[in-house]
Image 1 (cartoon, rainbow, N blue to C red):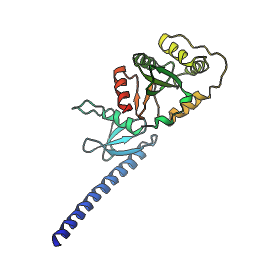
Image 2 (cartoon, rainbow, N blue to C red):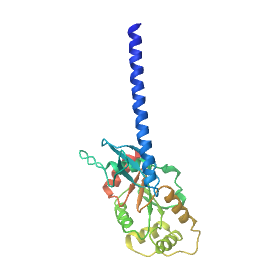
Image 3 (spheres, helix red, strand yellow):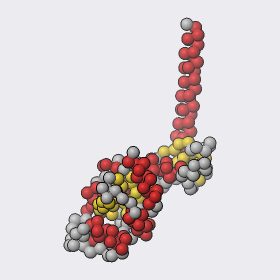
Length: 242
């Protein structure tokens, strides 16, 4: 009985130490968050956690991840990469923290293009005048069995808005989109139509921290910023499907 009591007491002591360390860690990150928020008043800090590097903390600004020392005196800007695996840890964390509910996207406000059986699904926020968006469209040409929902997201210029409206009001939106992005054939609207979907896309993108085009969302809710190469996009879609 005495032995059992000693074991139980030791277990409680270990648990107390663990809780104390956890509380201390929370106090450290909470204090750091408050300090940085006062110093970066123009930004909204979503969270502060320990990074894989001792003494360095990950600071999530929503659209960007930066790194800080424990006192908030210095900031590191740029990507953290695992030297052994070459994995971009910053990009992976940002993708995970900004994960969305893919099924809840308003697909009726997107231009739908189906390739093959359309089994894999992705959503893309794209500006018709964005050169990187056109580069992504070239990558998409080589993919099969995918459904691409393109949310027209005209953020570059008034002409981007005009082209988006012409594409949206075309008789065949998918054809008009691909003809412009791949073959540089200017879209022609079939007439006036309700373009409220474009305004809704802009509001949606801002709410989801889409701060650049193109931005790809996979079926599992992860995002891939920029003109993702076809081979990587194919791999990521396979991961998302499982």
